Length: 287
Image (cartoon, rainbow, N blue to C red; front, side, top):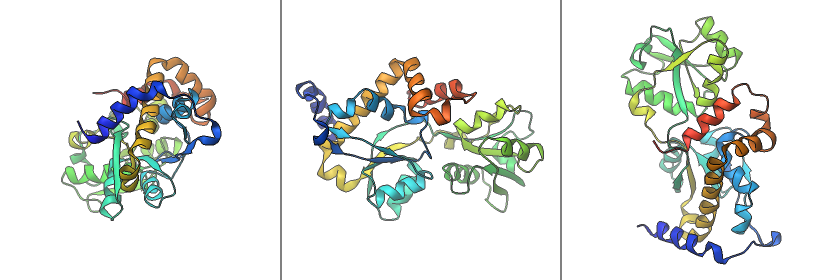
């Protein structure tokens, strides 16, 4: 058992001994996610806020948004926030650049990005993408590291063998790009990929197995925070896990809160909202 695990266990045992903290005494502990706005993927944070779990731990938790994993990692490294939820690839790249980050909890079990082709395509694997083009939501998007790793894993080279172009976010731009043969595959967040079949193009994945098995987003902090205030991290993780447990045990109530309060802009009138909520729950379910 690690020192952090022992501290977490002790904190759980002592949790019942402490009561709610007055609002003026709450400790600010603000974070950032790779998401560009409120989505169901952050439901453990939202449910912990809704149920008062953070306040019970004496924390004032605010979730901020970013332009993607790389941007979120930069914000954490710069000290603009106290914690961040972003891709493992972004964490490793930031550490390689000399910024000491520490991942303390896995948030999603699988990677949340995928590469797909139309179901009736002759392309059966990434190896068949030689001379082809992959569409992306953004050349700086979270899908880019995964896509580049998939190209290398398949023995291909970006630029020479496979081109990458911007082609929407699973929206009509993506559909037109497929129909006009501007792209032969599309890489993006799985939530965006749900929109493509809904617009008449069934899809299937061609992401190499070695890449598909890469872990998803993790909760990271600066190493100095990990070393100087582990008790604070125990409180935050404990409350967040309570939010996760509440949301998973009360999935209908959680979905309603997400649609009407916490992620209304992305879920409220979205025709694939139920499918997306099921997908999100799978992110948080052990394989």
